[in-house]
Image 1 (cartoon, each protein chain N blue to C red):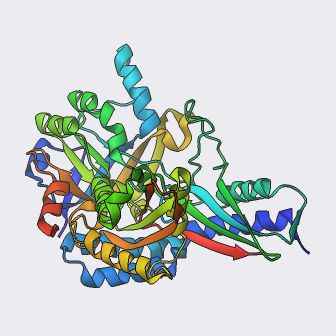
Image 2 (image 1 turned 180 degrees about the horizontal axis):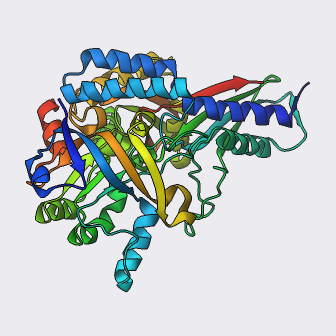
Image 3 (image 1 turned 120 degrees about the vertical axis):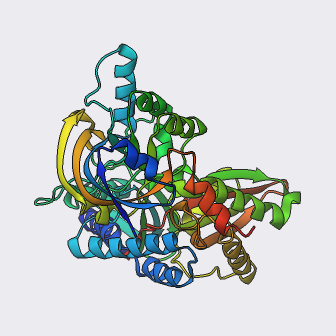
Length: 183
Length: 280
């Protein structure tokens, strides 16, 4: 059974989630991957404002395919999160609450998730056509020149994810594997 | 001597790029269905069910199954009695990629320069390997290879004394380290022998063999079966969330090598194992 959660989050919603929980997210999230993170890090370094206020928000690591005529968005599954690890703790310290991606996070990111009471969700890598159906509207809000890597504001409905790293330090990638490991 | 026209190659490659990205191969679908019956984890089963549903949506709605529509890798068997007119074979394949990725609304994922990192905006160039063969035919084997699994691939120059056990330990290590990042359930491609660059090529080439098809050499086939069982005991499972389906298959290719060498390359493929072939 999946839990239904509204994003941006209420703090108590985050604290109630545990690694392994299946969740359907509804609300607003922002997309950013490698190039957008690099630019945001440069903005932070310069003391310039980010293209959106990250406080309590969720970033989805994705670079969608181009939309066909009549489509809201092309296929839009998660990309590997670890490439964003270098930039993530600074964003979490600024109030970012959640991330959606796939794959391991660094120890530093995991510590920062606990410290900032944030959360990391895994979406199913390669399930991009299915996931796109949960995306109801798309607006490029920054870095349009980056094409697929631009920052987009997405309105999502029942977007399927699994909790990987919760705010209490649990990690599904560790616990899940331990449960089924035979060698 | 057979004459093949540039434009025919362009059209065929474009069609293969689109079909590979919209229509998941029957071999992968069958492997998903089989895994669904044996997977022990409930979350793992849910992941596999979603992947089956995802592939159905992609085929029916003519959209890419994954947003990473990949680097196009072609292994071309060019008959020595075949003549290509109208331009170079390399240009024809790249024109085909350009057309397929444009017409098919596929994502352009290639940067022109690894340091400057500016997108070429047409997914070219592809990576093209040409093997000269006897006869007058032109066979093109293409794959749209995802970046996530490619990033977790690895190569090691083992010592001959490391032997089969050393090879097995190394392959299991690569899969273990890759964990969720390579988008399991995986297809594991292995090249053993050759030299430094050749074993990497063999590993890539092995991924063109359909899932379920074992190596013709029985000794190699046995090694594939044995490793497949061990990989699936690692516990990584679908999407690395824990489970008994870590790999859908493993493919091994072997080749002659130097007396001092035992090169081994492991090229991981995600479950979106997209390969097409055509003969002109």
